[in-house]
Image (cartoon, rainbow, N blue to C red; front, top):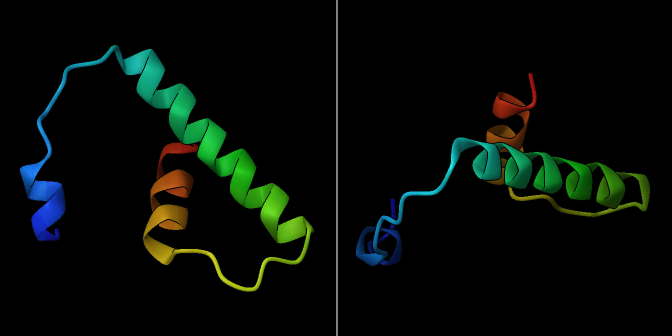
Length: 53
């Protein structure tokens, strides 16, 4: 983790909101790939696929 991530406050949110946001990012990655994206952040893609199951 970078220094900036460590400085962010931890705010509790419902698990459903977290799941929906991960699904949203996964859809955006899929759309970008279909449109010919040249580069996708591997950490974000891995996180989205891990939770997509």
